[in-house]
Image (cartoon, rainbow, N blue to C red; front, side, top):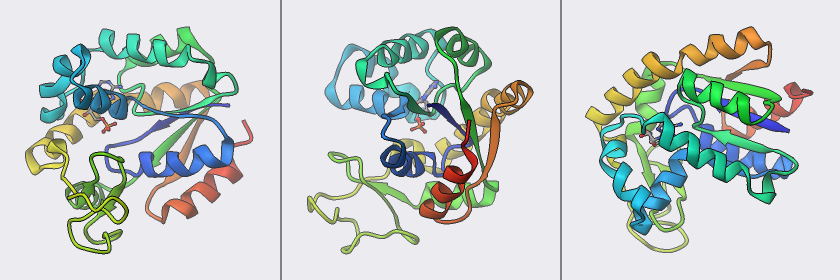
Amino acid sequence: MNIVLLGPPGAGKGTVAALLKKELGVPHISTGDIFRENIKGGTELGRKVETILASGALVPDEVTIEMVKDRLAKDDTASGYILDGFPRTIGQAEALDAMDTIDCVLNFVLSSEEIIKRLSGRRLCKSTGRIYHIVSNPPKVEGIDDETGEPLIQRDDDKPEAIKHRLEVYEAQTAPLIDYYRKKGNLIDVDSSPSPETIVKAIMKEIKC
Ligand code: AMP
């Protein structure tokens, strides 16, 4: 099953995708994670996109589409995938349509107030990618990863100015995709205010597509 997760930054797509991946046995493909891995690894792509990510703007469509095309061509996508953070523009959605058939699009719905709370409190362990929240999911020791003992960091794009920009970018460029997929008839709205486990249960009931 080919699934797209749509919704504003901070709506919990990444956390839910990690759980959903276990339920469905298909890979979780996050374009944000792929960009961050490239930045960490100092690749040519990483150098090209580093300042774009830090500002909260979108990487140009041609770069992103090419990267996704390569990723979807890998063998592990044979029985499906969960795309998280792609498409984010109408151009990307049209390119995805030309690549593959999408069975369902899960549209994560959350208020702007809750999004800001979630993003500004998010912390992460750089080496493992494990995600915490200073209020709702704190580490055992403040500022330290539970397993590796490394100091937790705040993503540059989770800082206040970048959050504001990311939400504006979402409204202007990504929100139009809700209509795009609703018209196609494969969009399912998901209330992303409950816990990730509750959200996954609701999704598993809904996806019969
Ligand atoms: P995310 O982890 O999904 O919030 O993505 C982090 C950042 O990566 C975004 O703010 C963009 O700069 C970049 N990015 C991720 N996915 C895309 C995409 N589909 N198109 C353009 N830029 C993207």
